[in-house]
Amino acid sequence: MRNRTFIFKNQPRIHATATLGGPKEGSGPVGKYIDTIVHDDYFGEKTFEKSERKMLEYAIRQAIQKTNFSDKEIGAIVAGDLLNQIISSSYACRAFDIPFLGIYNACSTMSEAFIIGGMMVDGGYVENVICATGSHFSSAERQYRYPLELGNTRPPQAQWTVTGAGAAVLSVRGKGPKLVAATLGKVVDFGITDTNNMGAAMAPAAADTLLEHFKNSHFKPEDYDLIITGDLGAFGSRIFKDLMWEKGFDISERHVDCGEMIYNIAEDEFQGGSGAGCSAIVFNGYFYKKLCNKEYKRIVLIATGALLSSVSSQQGESIPSIAHAAVFES
Amino acid sequence: MQGNENINFNKNYIDYISSIAPKTKETRSLLRAFWVGGTICCIGQFIRFAFETWLGLSGDELAAYVSVVLIFLGGLLTGLGVYDRIGKYAGGGSIVPITGFANSVVSPAMEFKSEGFIYGTASKMFIIAGPIIVFGVASSVLIGLSYYIYFLVV
Image (cartoon, rainbow over the protein chains, first blue to last red):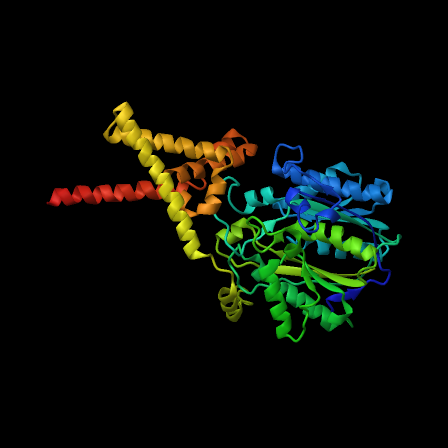
């Protein structure tokens, strides 16, 4: 019988993390946990795409520097992003003398990277692996929506793509938080077609993964200090809690959402942040530090991704979604 | 073999979402659109009176001058990064007037400058305004034809 949940026997540790955020992220509630705040959306580059890849490269470089490893000691970089053909990750990795595995699961790329990286380290194939991802509001708007200067209104269920990048070094050594278990997500599509309502599209995927996780492992909701979703936003989180409630799990006291907590809702963020960078910044910045301080004993990160493209949405297709769960202990 | 399309679709879920999804505040949007759109039209009318009085223009020439000025203002405000803020507030109030049309041409032109002048600016310039032009031209031809036929018959 197939089991989507597995336990890491050797428990890879997060040796170090590095995060970088834009001005809006820096002024939000988790701003002081972000390592580097960039006050210029362009990050000194000519285009937003170049800016995004420079952010990712910067985060990876910072993470390596914190561990004092040389490039040769890193087994691989597992990274992905939201742009077509994941160009940000590929171009960022030109700068490193490290093998590169490009992955894509939209906004759930961070937990996917943790799971793949964790498997590589746990299996003993590499000693250290880098898991990284990032996104940029302006390059995402360009690709998925309208020109930035176009004068249109954002609907109230919309979210705001996070500008920033995060990287973590998983290692066999070190004292950091341990990656103990993971549950793989499957593609779930309940038929939501509104591309502005990603939270509603992704909530069933998150619920599916978490239910599977509880079913296959000995963990119960009470075993977790926090159940963290990636970027469901305020509205998506409400649906997620409703769906779990319907199946007999009350997670309302333990659930937090990275997208919901990253911004002060002041402009048109509405339901909160989204994008691959969202869980990357909030987890590698805020939650990593809280785990290191032993404020949380065990948390589960369920980053959620909406697997659509601008072509599929223009052709009126619904939005398939996915969520991967990774369990960390301090 | 049955295709896997629509296999997991859950009508109950879609109904549930549409019943609890946050709604646009219609009254507020309408009021904002009304006063901003009205103000833009008043500015246009003022320019029209000014040109009529001081430059002595009239008819088609006057209309063309007013349009040119408004299009210029729309383009300028887009370039200065102001028009998208007006649009965010006013919605349809700033999309429908001719300044909104200028905005929809200038904003992609600016945005896609990074892909070069030919494949970027020039080819992407009408991605938003293109449909407006197509349907505008097509409907004007239809109206023109029916007008012509009507007078031919009568």
